[in-house]
Length: 379
Image 1: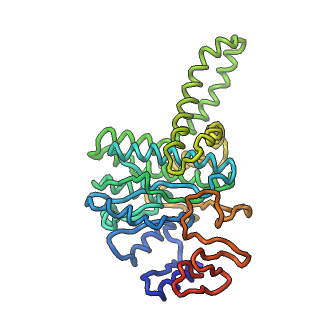
Image 2: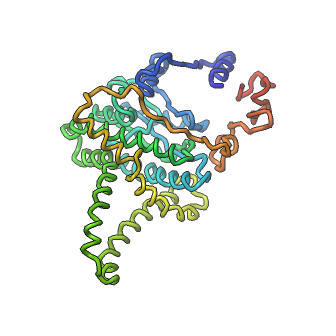
């Protein structure tokens, strides 16, 4: 389908090409390097296949490159299938907290922050100056953005530059995604943390990089805490309930309330915040989802620990030949891409009919030829 669309637009006079590699060397990083060989212009925009950029994306992003030191622009993720199930509701809140507060705070405080791999733009000269896309980590986006900022470039985060995308709808897909992100960040620690600490960046920036990249190591601490709890419960057996409430209650409230406020207020600040208070009921599920993966085999715990163990026996610059495990998105047959439950879908997204996808402009379907030579959705 993608190739047919490219050929149609090329026949209409647009400079567009469909590029397919014969091998998977470097995986996504290798594909990005391969694409840059034929890319034209000073800037490149990047979107994963499940992202739907708005029509005015370039108009809103490109002006920020007027500053010659800006290496990349990062947009804010929105969620096409937020309402699909409880898992997608919880994931959406988790990501909203990251993009609304964490990215905003790092950008405003002039600390380093990571490019998220999609929904953004890069200055080609900054990519080249930072050493290009390297494939010795499975989070090549974070790797490159940190290397560029260490070179003196900076990124710009645009909270209002919203790009809707699809969330994994199954637990295994979610675990696979978290596995990649956790292991990739641990690999970036191994690769760049020494360079960051010895750089000329401010102490504030160095500390922020450390806490950001080592965040998934908290899961290993949670495992240690759970083990310590066993003798603690034995020693405290027989303690009156009101004593336990007085000693443990404040710590529980401090943790629960802080997390609840953080993610709850993120729902008020997102662009798609209609009836945001109705989402607060998913915050307890968010807390349980954040704790439960530390016990699972494909989890942030094992991902981080396996990447950190690679300090001992994996030479720098190497990577398993099998590459990263990609997570399926809408693998459930009940999810319909053409009729998602959010208003953030661009107007040009096609509707469905008995014959397949239907163009919103001229009404042609994927099972027939376009009725107009200028059809914006050629099949």
